[in-house]
Amino acid sequence: MIKDPHIASAFDRDLEAVQAMIMKMGGLVEQAISDAAQALDTHDEALAEKVRNGDRAIDALEETINTECARLIALRAPIATDLRTVLTVMKIAGSLERCGDYAKNLAKRTPVLTAMTPIPGAAGSIRRMARQVGMLLKDSLDAFVTRDVGLATEVRMRDAEVDQMYNALFREFLTFMMEDPRNISACMHLHFIAKNIERVGDHATTIAEQVIYLATGSMPEDPRPKAGLAGSDA
Image (cartoon, rainbow, N blue to C red; front, top):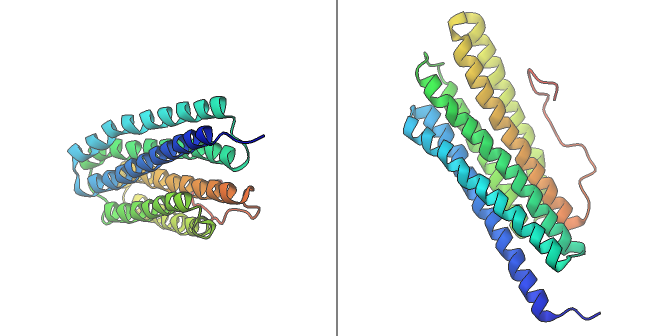
């Protein structure tokens, strides 16, 4: 059966459009994570509010992407690589939506922590961790655009660095809580934030694994590199 070039061209355009939406969604998520960490560090409640409100745009993009992907499957009946691309786009959109939720959760804690006695160095450490995770997310999306298996594999390996940063923060917060019980509330909020950022790193790694699946047709067989997470069963 000869594939109608006009139909193929229309499908390619539709596929490019949903991939462009993924990159737009990824940019919004990266900015939200960066802004949420900055708001915490600088006690900028207006910026935190912007992050919380901006989550609606991220959610709307995910819904649009899923609707378009469902339409593509129904109308075009893609096969092989084309089908893998559509399925990968849907899974990446789901991961990005969760990352947007984590950024919103970070922003929700800013007004609460602003009213508490600050934990020395904590906000800066959180911001560095968020920057590291943001780079992972960017690289995983770049790997998606270029179908770069090498970069996607590198992202998988680098997630262990985020785990190590989380572990160091967890131990630091425990020390502050043991030294002065008045630090417990603030440290619990900060631990929640650090855990959310660590989860974003997990989703960046999930995106990288989807890129490997897209490019090769199979998921990585080796276990995902992980540093043992403090205070967790993971």
